[in-house]
Image (cartoon, rainbow, N blue to C red; front, side, top):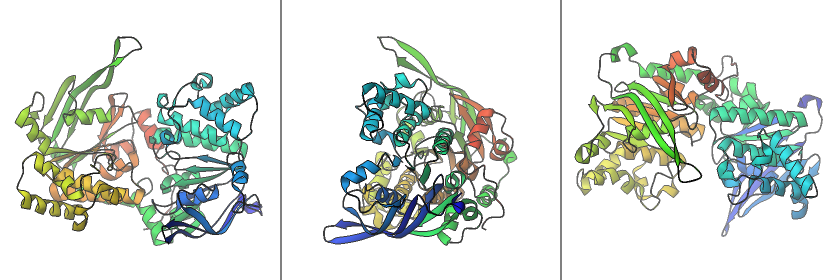
Length: 556
């Protein structure tokens, strides 16, 4: 599209951004150049800290703290944005540049209704005047964003919306004034892949109808290639590669881009084959062996309070059955609300089952208490999604990793210290990190600490609940490789809970697909990916970002 247009809608030249800390100035963007044409979608990709979001914030003059544009030019439709006054820039935001941020829950005020917040944006941008006209426009933009029954939704609050609905509300705010440019900063990273696809499809149809240009910020190269005509790859505040999406995927030239391509589960077919070879042992050999975990007809009912004093039953897990052979990985997959995490909690004895059987190495886990329950938990450890939320910010890393040893009264102080050093080495972290605190570590380092803590008691089974979903693709790749190496070295059994089938293809031996509390399909990874029997499974497969892109030879 851009070939027939001489002047880009957005043109950035030699953009530099710096943050001042006391007397020092830290430059974080080092001469960024990019062009985005009318009606075009351009994706900026890179890991956390690469400068993607800083570039977006500089365009709309919303750099945090002491951040400042120190050099360069940002032209929007031929108009220099860096020289505008605050009031002039406020008129550009919303009217000419729309913005969809990453986390809808933290970007919507929890004490204001959705309608109030949409109307506030409409008034601020001068789109409509008068109470009735503003309300009518608010209903219109919510409907355009795909929210059914928009009149009623106006009066609801963010906590009454699902994640996908909240993201639609933010899209409606971003597009309310029909801007020329929409900046979408990781707009669906917190959503299930099926919801993500619906939201991105709808955003694409809206922007296409209005001829809006889109600047998509993401760490997911597969998603970028599927949604954008062109890709810009950033690392350490610099653009290291740029070009048409297909070209970037099939022939990445820069070593960093090659790493991103190799780390993206949805497009790295050579890694899937390598992982299959690494798993090695054929499934037939497991059939006559007692599984590490056996689940039969597992059911969990809750009572949900109604408006009065009564309650209604809700079945979160409905007659779920599966086996996990020793030393293997079972992936439990499905959308949010499918019952995956509830199954994990019952296996870990965090929740009691309403009915059904859970056996660990052939032993029924029901009715255990005291010492027996403690022994079970020693053999089976969890790793959760949010490594920052699951680590005590007031405990240093050494004490965090040693905590299970204290609880189970394992060893003395010198032996525990020695075990902590051994565990740090196992998860490829330097020993000096033992004296640091969680806020001093990156997301990937924190997740390695969480894994080290889970391994402290030498368990046989790890329950990994969305353990890599919050991580950048490169860090995710490192953690998945670490888990595979640890499984081979220690003969660990994994229950891997995720909504992302691309990751499943890389790590799992067998798959159970859950929908609305039930297992709707199960089989080996190859069986599920090659011949899904259920429409629901096919929808999950279709929703993998980048899965629909037919690639050629690619980079090896």
